[in-house]
Image (tube, rainbow, N blue to C red):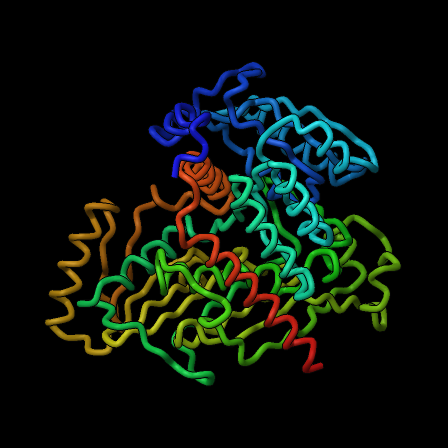
Length: 459
């Protein structure tokens, strides 16, 4: 449905060639036909990563509305860093409004047509609803909702978006990671993967685990996190936050381009969460704050902050049992954030590992049920077919099956995935969202909030 024809020429140009990103104008523009970004309360570094590269079709003038403070300063510092870097510098012009009434002022001004949300999640669902009601498109970092009580508000926001013909979309960067993409591709190959197994609650057919670290580097510099990041009431707990990525991957890979109805296709059967202990010195190294703030005191015992950093949920998805685990630790001894994903088919299992053996790089393995000549022949044919879409991808025989060798050109890293999501969003402004995306977004957040409700009830 051509709902956004006024964007057609520019969006088409943006999608036609990646080189356009390197030839963006070096001065601020004021073309009324361009996509104009409005950044609201950018308390998370993801808000800046959306602007790490220039995109044809997006005005280089970005309006920022936020309260005064270190979070705004950190956001502007990252944008300045991108503008001043030696290689492929950006040319953003940030027009900033600072004040306690920043959100109300944004709604009154409406200086653009796309609101970007990545920050404190306590009011995010409210920001989404009111932005949509004002006729603005919304590109939101995850999570869109962090409590079961707010889920109906998100449902209503999607209905309003459809009525007003604007887009509401969340930033799912993990869909752009090449190992996840190839795992999904191989799952659609019946001669190699076979049929997706159903599994059981005790032995799920899909297991996905993510480990993140509080102390890390972003764009080459040590990240300073706000203290509210450790408050589940403001950031969301592990299931409602990082867990959303994993729930999304399960839906996206197991049932591609399929609308999922959360009222009948999902049944949450088990969920729990548990703390990540952080000493005061560790908290200080992460936040640059010497003391735990008052709102975190209920989580402090014997001078240790018990952050709500870990969670898991087991559920059935259209009859397939899935388990996702999201964990947070202080600091990686080696490498950085890690991802693990296992999906079980009747002919093989597909496993992504990112440990020391893989040099902390996501690596995809194929584990055949029968490692025989017939399987090898079928796999050779599938890899040949895959090379029409992903030239250079190959498989290597190992003791436990096969290792998928992926050319370095596809390994662009987590930070680059934000601009790739933005490119998809630009395309959807022209065409409208695929019919399956909205029900799948609702199903994803239903799963995370239902899991949170169950975990809390069992304490």
